[in-house]
Length: 177
Image (cartoon, rainbow, N blue to C red; front, side, top):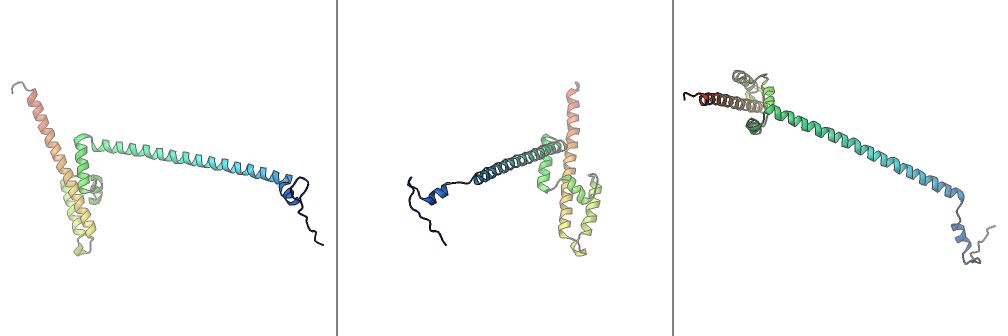
């Protein structure tokens, strides 16, 4: 019923089982080559996906960088260069907010001393803690007024300087003096 395989050595010194393991069927070779081709194709597609993904990320990063540079250049133009820009940056860092933010908080369109004071008085009274208001909002209103007051002070100093500069320019060119 059961056949016993004799593992006796053949004439060349190898056993029957060793010969059986060494022989490969042609379909196995075909399967291996097809499987290897699929692995190569998958690796090729994976490499293409990685390269395309890298290109997309690189383009997006470059575009974001260009936009950031352009925005910073526009902000520098708006703030003014040189000493005016440095003073504005110093005022922003001291108060922690820009003029635009302060205008939004006080709900005013232009920086005018009377309008700033009127809006400040109203918002400070409305946000009084005794009336159920918020101390946080009241603090924001105070900081916004401080920021706009510093901006008004800078504008007055700049205006005084330009008037003084124009007076000195006129006297220098006048031969009678």
